[in-house]
Length: 198
Image 1 (cartoon, rainbow, N blue to C red):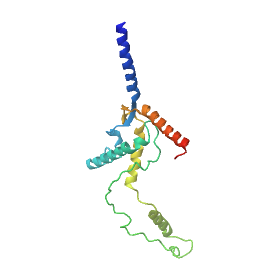
Image 2: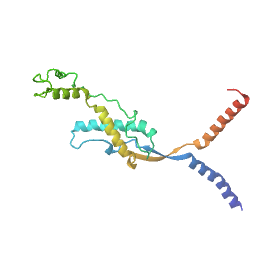
Image 3: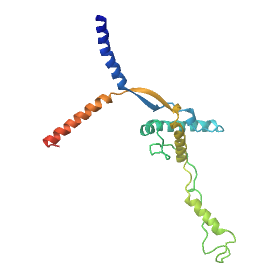
Image 4: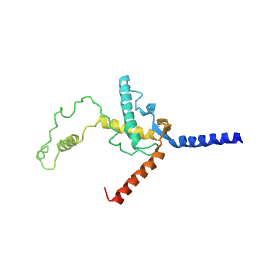
């Protein structure tokens, strides 16, 4: 009889404690802090300097995903086709001589079309003028935006892969404090409404 009481007392303490710990720890899935090797878009033919630069760029985009993207989109949920504004890094790109230094091509005069006869274009002056206008309208490619889109595609590929994620458990007593907080807020609102004060 004494043995049964000791076991009962131990169970009365142990079972609620185990249930409390189980309910207070929840499984979480987070992106790995260390970047998966296949996230880096490094060409096998690239030189050493280019590989290092690409590795740094990949790590910077991975840190951006760790800091912003994993909190916005959960594991297993599809990422949008276009990268959100948060998936952006600040990179100082080297100055590349562009069209501002180059002399703008001259447009031919529409009235002087080759031989001066309307409708004839023996030297292709009008076609050359149209091509020059198209070149001026098309902006030069932006290497920062290109790398952003390229690494967004790579993140989309890795997002559903288990190798990019780690599972753990986190202490969280919201299941207990959440209802208490809601009950307090409800009672405060009820008293305000009942007394007519706001």
